[in-house]
Image (cartoon, rainbow over all chains, first blue to last red; front, side, top):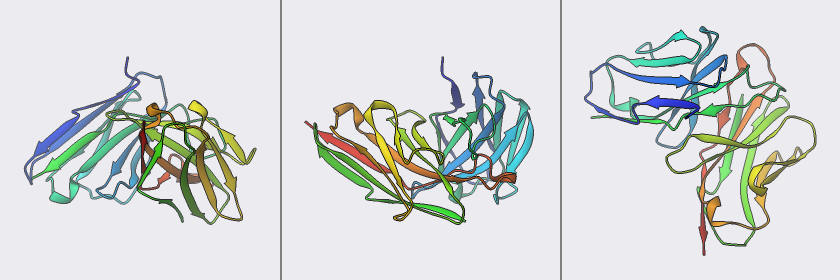
Length: 117
Length: 117
């Protein structure tokens, strides 16, 4: 079974549309993340949820809204898509809260390639 | 603020040769450093992690990295390349700043490793 799964793998859509990317983890982790990989390959964190509570909200347009119905799911909804939203979006999860001296590590999904035409 | 620079977007080696992937970081506080690997059509996987313990860190698949504070570097090495090592490698930095730093890994741009027979 895939630990962190994202759907769809590829998403091609027109400007102005609204789309969602779904993410599910079956690891029993408490924390989930959305990262955006831009055309220059930089991975940047967008959001993080811990036990369904938003804990990281980087400077992203309000058109991006994460939704966590339960701690195993973190979906990303994007309104009024723009050309600049084209990128690969990665979902990730960790048992606890990474970034400190713990043994936690991030488990990544395989990415969703979004192309806005 | 923190940042990561990976020198060389593409590295090509022969099978059996030394692998050296360069990573330099910038951080205002003691960093935690990571190497992730991404195989085709898969998510990122953690190779190894430095969290202020031993400066020489051993990871999976024979990879290791050495933290050198004086050089602000965390280069990834493997004595003998194998065909299965062909992938894209990402260096990342995080800080123990507490608060909302959790999960805020800052990634480099990635280095594609090609291994020739």
